[in-house]
Amino acid sequence: MATLSSTHCRSYSPLPSSSCAPSSSSSCSKLGHRQRVSVSSVPKRCLAAKVYCVKSQTSSAGRMQDGAMATTATPIENETPFKRLKDGLLSVPSSIEYNEPVALDINEKESAVSITVVGASGDLAKKKIFPALFALYYEDCLPKHFTVYGYARSKMTDAELRNMVSKTLTCRIDKRENCSEKMEQFLKRCFYHSGQYDSQENFAELDKKLKEHEGGRVSNRLFYLSIPPNIFIDSVRCASLSASSGNGWTRVIVEKPFGRDSESSAALTKALKQYLEEDQIFRIDHYLGKELVENLSVLRFSNLIFEPLWSRQYIRNVQLIFSEDFGTEGRGGYFDNYGIIRDIMQNHLLQILALFAMETPVSLDAEDIRNEKVKVLRSMRPLQLENVVVGQYKSHTKGGVTYPAYTDDKTVPKDSLTPTFAAAAVFIDNARWDGVPFLVKAGKALHTKRAEIRVQFRHVPGNLYNRNFGTDLDRATNELVIRVQPDEAIYLKINNKVPGLGMRLDRSNLNLHYAARRKKAVYP
Image (cartoon, rainbow, N blue to C red; front, top):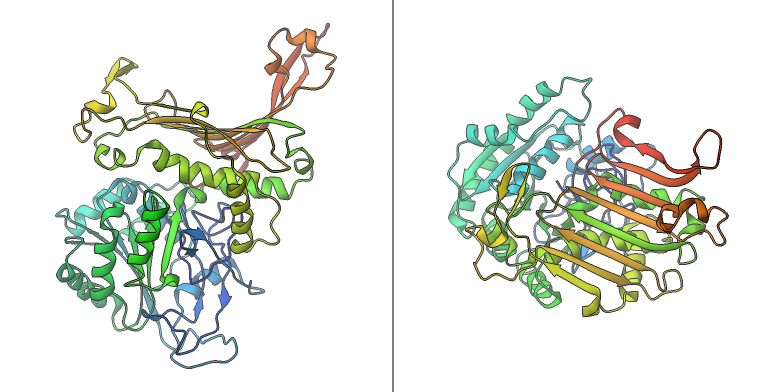
């Protein structure tokens, strides 16, 4: 899911992206701020005067300026993350002009939050968004009055939606508590409305249903676009004209990919701004919500042992690996328009690379973090063809089961050349990383499902024990592995002596295994 946030959000490393806390699996964490409000500055759709961010389980939403993450905020002292979150979602817009920052009394009138998942019958909604919303509800990060509506073209009843959603909800957060009861309560808040994405009439019907559930309260509405980019504009137009809030805020979360290139991204932003203010638009990359991605900057900047080693003097190469053990499985129509490079590498993996390689930001404010990430991207050497490999999976057999080739998918053109695998050597031409290859690899229908960062260190100069390693010098290389999924872990490979007579060396792992270390499960 995505973090629900305000005009500006405070972000941590990859700040929750999925939940609310920076780089942590706890519930809410982006910090809020008190906002200056005036009649002239209130946007079209009535933004709240006091707003916060919400963290979910799998994706992070922060305000992004023309496609880049940009957030600023001032922490409020002596408030728990839960309280900050609830206050933000229960915020009430102001129609009074203030010359100084003012904290409004959010209890003057109760508010309701209506979350509409546009494209509710799709894969992303079923696997990520609804489970993320449930995680927020489970940890009391949603307000008292909230409603979740699924909107899609498929014909479906409320009961059928709840049955579909229930199959993806799990009680993995804290098995000591009665999660099944919370699940039943959450499903009672879920409803469905069928309609076309370009129909103002259908969105007007949705608006009537939302008003029934809001019961005359201040209406805050969030639309999560879990749909292909080619229908973003139609949906936003209809939602803005027919289903936006009349007395609260209206916000739209846009999932990646945000266009195919810089030109199409700019065109999409321009089109969205015909119906929304910039501070109503939240462009997100849900992968930043992965627990280990959020932990990346914490690992580096709060542990002195790593900072001096984080450079070309000690690191031989960095590998960012993303592999899936399944193919397109009927989703080839979408995938064939983008391919593995646009679908995974230029967003998920490039975000991780920038977080890994950036310099220490001035603060944890999202704007400061963004600035350092941009410096990394600007320092990247243009890709050379000889440093790129692409491929496409063929029919194969695994475990006695035969799997079809990519072009055997009925939704994929038979003559498609869209890559399902890509690997590239990326170089960052700055003082810290000059000459260090960042090996970025992503693919579908591979042998294993995994996402990890592997940091391989250089060989020990004049190593006394080279003869014990033989010709395989890689065995003598230390390696730091950050396993993002599955089975989250951070471990460091070191060399040590095998107990007993003689001098036999072996590799061991200094291991932080999340499942064993943490009582609460990590968000997927």
